[in-house]
Amino acid sequence: MAKYENLMRGIKERRIYQRIDKDILSEIPDDKVLRSIYDCINGNKLDSSDSFPQLSPETRAVYACTLLNWEVVNGGFIEFLYVYAEDFLHEALLGLKFIGANAHHDIVSRVSDLTMKDGSADEALEDAGVLAQLFPLNNEYTELCQSQALEPIIVSFARTHSAKILVEPDAPE
Image 1 (cartoon, rainbow, N blue to C red):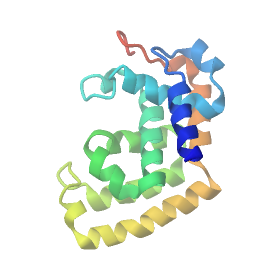
Image 2: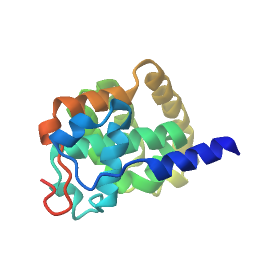
Image 3: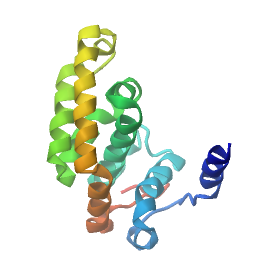
Image 4: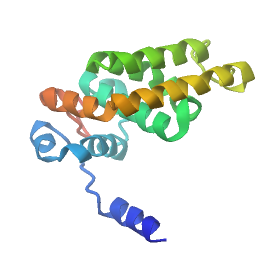
């Protein structure tokens, strides 16, 4: 019960920024950078198909790579594909290349080739053969993340490109 209470307290106490720019980003500790950008984009409802493309390529890369990584590490590719494939798989692939996470990109690209037919993963997620092929890719991704964690790569990219990481409710780019 204490673990749950600590988790809930952490959620309630975390700062959610209404805006993120280079100056604000420089004040956020590394371990909170990705959550802060993610929360700011979600809080401003900039993750919609209308608003997301208006964000800078750097901001989209950070968000999509973070979303992909969190979902796959916590629930596997099936969870990510089921919930986010149509909206964020392509952005995550672009983002992984952009931030230089080539080994991660290779695995996610194989997942995309396996599952994305006609722009949707729906049929693939109902195919037992495809699902059986996803499990080894989950393991491969997990093993890669143990030796080459993606979060520090994303944080380093965000720090290096901080002038281009801009999240504002009224003017996303």
